[in-house]
Image 1 (cartoon, rainbow, N blue to C red):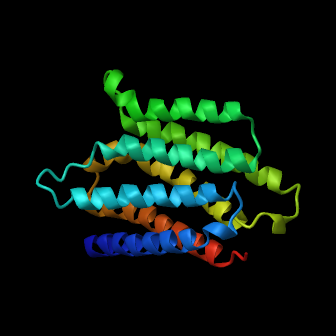
Image 2: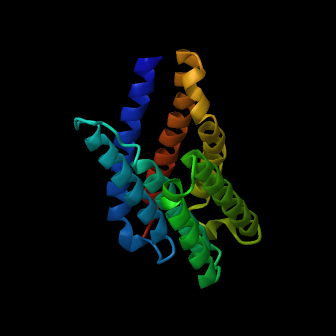
Length: 205
């Protein structure tokens, strides 16, 4: 089970790299609003690359990256759907304030757990994505070239919110249960990156 766990992680790294290369190559084929999907991919790649490099250092402690990951993921994903839904600039102000909160909350709130930020940010993203999908029903599906990816975002964040809520308790679980739970998350990541690749490959100028 442990070997399968690490194999899935390695596959996800390969797919993320391919996603980045293809997304950037399709940059001119995307609209101004769609470019936010590319910003998301670039950010996730940066986080994963940094964490991977840190794993080879003496400390191997990448815990400080966690709030950065939560805040950056939240800002880029909400940015995608704020643009898609043509919400006002005040929405960006609100999401910017929340992003700063997620980035710094553990520094000024006593006994604050960043898992709370992950849960809150995921719930907000899920709500925003769900609203976007509902609005999409009112238009011609062909007009949304990223509809499949949007649906995958919804399921991915919906499942991950439960996984990350359990994160602090995983240590007390049997090792097989620990790996099973994280394998589910990693498989979802692999599917997400696969759909990202498929979506960008299908884009035409």
